[in-house]
Amino acid sequence: MMAGRYTAIGITVAVLAALPLAVTSNEVMMFLILSLMFALLGQAWNILGGYAGQFSFGHAAFFGSGAYATATLQIHLGLNPWVAMVAAMAVGGLVGGLIGALSFRFRLRGSYFALITLAFAEVLRVVAHTSDFTGGGAGILIPLDERAANFQFESRDVFYYVILAMVAGSLVLTRALEDSRLGAWMLAIRENEDSARALGVDTFRVKLTAIILSGAMAASAGVFYTQIFLYLDPGIAYGVGFSVEALLVPIIGGMGTVFGPLVGSFVLHGVDEVTKELTGDAPGLNLALYGALLIVMLRFLPDGLMGLMGRLRRAAGRRQPQQAGRLKEAGDA
Amino acid sequence: MLEVRNISKSFGGLRAVDNASLDVSAGAIVSLIGPNGAGKTTLFTIIAGFQKPDEGRVRFEGRDITGLPAHTICRLGLVRTFQVVQPFGRLTVRENIAVGAHLRHADRADALENAEAVARRVGMGAMLDQPATSLTVAGRKRLELARALATEPSLLLLDEVMAGLNPTEIDEIVPVIRSIRDDGVTILLIEHVMRAVMSLSEHAYVLNNGAIIASGPPRAVAADPQVVEAYLGHGAAKRIAASETAHA
Ligand SMILES: Nc1ncnc2c1ncn2[C@@H]1O[C@H](COP(=O)(O)OP(=O)(O)O)[C@@H](O)[C@H]1O
Ligand SMILES: [Mg+2]
Image (tube, rainbow over all chains, first blue to last red; front, side, top):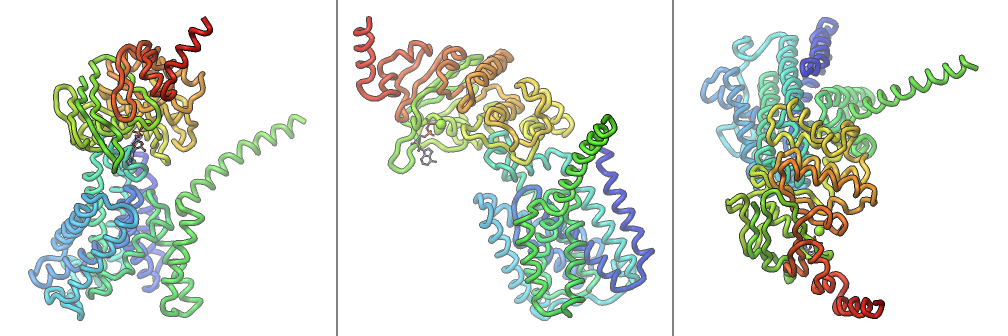
């Protein structure tokens, strides 16, 4: 019964894996790679926000910590980037655990929790700005050395397959979560925290687990970003841009669904590219566009595109038997 | 099984629970009655670990559980329902009940299977795939009961599970509650529907202004002049007695 729940993921990943065969343009390849990276970041947000109901406005804290962790571990300790990735994900989980322990212990919910996460991302940005270890405001540069053992690839295609594998992992993990006790407890907390407590759910522990998972996954997206651009500065890595992307992507695609972030990321960046074409990249325009999209989605499609698709499918399912009934009546007459 | 000793709780100047004590022995159905605002729900929240009392102790199966977190108390086998129903709105009936079942069943399929069995036990077998938001008041009250039952408790605290139900619905739920007790679950219930209190419980406590003012078999308690006054106002018992003599 449970194995069938992974077929859709298998098909999706197979289709995505075939895409590079049809794409020759470097620009389109980059579009696909970044869309997948934001799908990964969005999935991280989705686990905490979409499933456990804790809306973060500071996922840059995890993304940036993952990015800086892998960069500094390589530069200062000479660690292999693949090993550094694992360490960076642990750092992301740790930062998540810290923020979670503080805010959940004091029962911060809703906008208070969102503000705390935003504050942490800002504090980390300032710390990265002032610390020599992270290269300060000038940022940190990773020497170019394109070898697979070094998590650097000459070919964009290889980067594409690496991020696709990471996204596939996040899809499988999220699906497994849906079929687990932890996932059921997260949904219960999202829907009604008091009821969850009454039914024996240790809400503090469950929320803490969710934010650690989310932090580690967001950090992995930060690691990938670092490896492909080989440069970080505090304003990028801990910038509010990643925090906004992280929440917008699942909100557009559908919070609390496995495919929501993936769908949302492709749609969001598709729209973004089209407007850039039309308006010639006016500064700040994409932020205004994101804001407008966010309002429209929350107002008209709170369950995102996945929810809309589900409703259309059900509506079609209802119409068909009716039509069949009418045809039968016509035949009888 | 449950010993509540001298519990007091104030909100600002209001003494919501005032030195209340009660006992529930294993296998019993005990009622807690009293006018609105008497402090019944507050006493439940304290017993179940949702609030800490200012004074007093709660013992459950011989163990002091005062001040333990709600989820720990639930794990020990004491579960409460909410007077104002608190369903997991966007989850189905099956998924709602499975949250309770997960307390003792880690495996998802196992918990879902248990949820189905519990749903059938409380007469919700036909509603398993409905979202909780689509349920009627009666359905939601039943869902509260089912979720709590799915945690496999030894003591069940029911807070007005019959409020808002019509007489037919009440007649349906009463035997369900009795059968739960017959399966070995001890029950303490807050109830306004006196007919149900009379037919279900062997023992009743009356709470008024936070204090226990009477206890005993439900029929005797309902006839207690102090209790009648608590419900109908000062002097009511005398007026009723007078009018009864006049009619006789
Ligand atoms: N959290 C709270 N804060 C302030 N007052 C409360 C709180 N909970 C209950 N009360 C007050 O305590 C009294 C008892 O309420 P409650 O226990 O709900 O009574 P009952 O369940 O018997 O109707 C009421 O006057 C109510 O307004
Ligand atoms: Mg009450």
